[in-house]
Length: 583
Ligand code: TEU
Ligand code: CA
Image (tube, protein in one colour):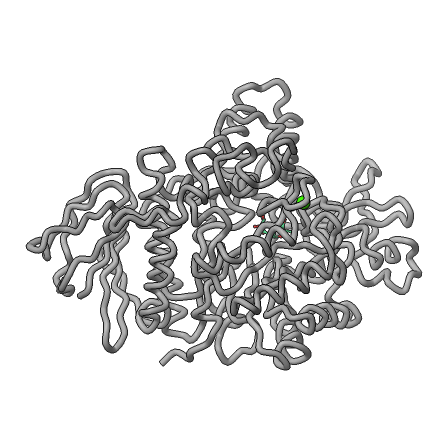
């Protein structure tokens, strides 16, 4: 049977600090703003808050470019504010998870400033420096053809005049990659972990932690995307040769000495053996990871991210079912998430965000996430059913460096091609990271209560804030017709109450070929629940599979609706309807 652990049962809520709550009226969310909302989070049923980076940073990539790991960016507050936040969390029996970004630093970090100063610098080898290549015409070229992750038209290498060499910068030129081959780098990272654990953090979300070990020959990637000078090269830097050694070292040196929770962000990895090496209970690497298969569902495989790819319920259940099975049978642990600060809003992406179906759709996703095995992660605004930005927004409302680079690439590659530009706008409205980064909508007042009415927030508030906001939803809990917030609250409480089945229980995928309905059974020795989720905007006649005997239908995400007592063999599902039953 599966070992009980607090971090398997706890509910994690991700705070994106810039957009959470501004208390000092500068248009940026801040740490006191997080502290001010702890009762709101406690009320929802949250145990742990994971806060995206608040460290000192020039903000080239919204704090994922860190200039000092042991200090706080003034726009977010001070170390004292963090101490106060931790104390206030403790008082509510809650915990703080820090975001650890150590694949790269900011180019303004003292380590990098020192490293770039000369080839003889004692910190030269803390980053990845290579000499140029020269093409047939004698023109200087980067050491290989790897594309930059947040600017796919650009090289992953940045030329530095001072010493005439390139440094690796997988995300942006402002985020030079650390050289983990150097033991001094690894020890410096261990010190960062100790610093925050000693200060009271409960653990870490580890940013792109599977990119820390690269294939040391740095070979060219095969050309897969036509018309592009630089190519996706994750094969050479994701889950590289020494990853497991480095993770086990972190565990041995630091984590084993504390009672922590760790979740590694691991883009690109699909191979189950590779995943199990990280999260296997006996491996002493990480507790769980964020696997991207669900949020990559609408990307064209092998291509860059800003593509659109059709999918239906069969893809969804194949992806989710696969990981539910593997983790349960082979002693790993899932993390459950549909959103984060890098993804569009789930209600706009996976269901239907129209006025008619937004609430039902958001509750359908909630029902799914609270009935699967793993640790639940809720992203700010997801508990309110917040939507993507409206299609009418002009490109200059998009603030993310990745979106800006994508617009620029389109202008450069297809100058004056209105159709291509309209297509780029469309893709960004569907997929840009900006969609999740608009300020949290607290109430219906100007600026949605995120910052004072006379202040311009760092990013525009979504137009729908008068309808979609926390004040309207908290406490709107009419029996059978709770708001999205109150539905989350109910479901999270139900999950904890029946954790033997919902957190730890077994999983059986039902009706696999159905292209509209995702159905499964969760069961323990004593309990068994059927979950039926209609991932389509149509009515569906659904036959209960022969091997399942429905005892009692329970209310799902539709207003007060309980299927008739006599319909134990067949049920008509309404658009985006989700139901559970005892069975
Ligand atoms: O993201 C890494 C990552 O792989 C993505 O989800 C990324 O947004 C995507 O590849 C872009 O298309 C992490 C952080 O979550 C992200 O915000 C940072 O920009 C990135 O690492 C670099 O630190
Ligand atoms: Ca502020």
